[in-house]
Image (cartoon, rainbow, N blue to C red):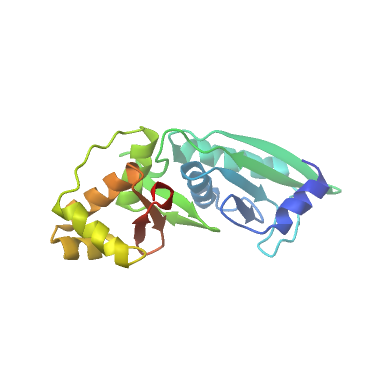
Length: 217
């Protein structure tokens, strides 16, 4: 990638597959962007670009690259695949382009508790990296494993389809209420139908929305 190509990329602004960081300060926090890309469609993390699209570059690119590579190796589980490009944008100023690959084994976690090896999974939604809900983690895992879901259209599925015939989307709580199910049972049905591609899911910060998969209609 040359400087002109970088400028064209930056002009698009942050989005589903593009994130800007001025510096690699707090690399343990930046890794959540890396994990979000790995759990979604992959993407490019540009270090040396400000939120306002100013291409400032890094004076000490070697240091920024080192600390971020160390953080990715330390905090990401399973390991994330990526490549790095260096783009010279001014004398002694470099932008680092981390190209993160979508992972085949999802969900990927940012490990915070190393003793218990537990952490948080993130997903990319528009230009934000959001914490994945339990249902989203189950969906990511089921799709990655190419899990085959067998189900019948019983009363609980019929109640869901009747609701979605009149409303564009539904969340777990609403479905549990209309089908008289526990939250756990309602979530399981929605997760299974999403893995089976009967439904699609739109994650948001506070809840996930489920809707009919229009490609199957």
